[in-house]
Length: 149
Image 1 (cartoon, helix red, strand yellow):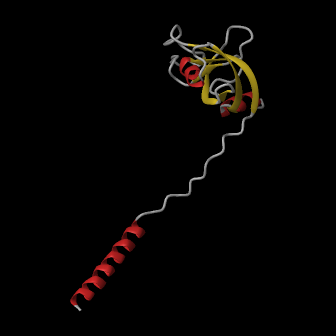
Image 2 (cartoon, one colour; image 1 turned 180 degrees about the horizontal axis):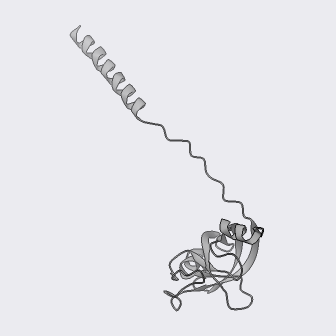
């Protein structure tokens, strides 16, 4: 009888402990895989990269160029725009922020930092044809461009 009572008491304490633990722990919110951002505009262009000779210089938006940052130069996209670059040959993609003007060579659509070229797999070749997806333009750009006088 004594062992039966002990087993019941142990079971009751275990159940009580489980209830206390479960009520104290919040279940995490359900995380659904997020869909990639839908681009505002998509085009293809030849990309080159710039690195060490420009490292530490001032970019068009006033930042110091860092060849290991995910940045790029584009001739006309607003500074601060977010762009996804996809290398169709490797299947790799990378998000970059436009912080400089360029490329300075005709026929090239975008210049990327060394790190971006490395991550997309074309640092050895120097050039690659990329899919360029404009994802976001800074809000203040649209306000200034479309404000009424």
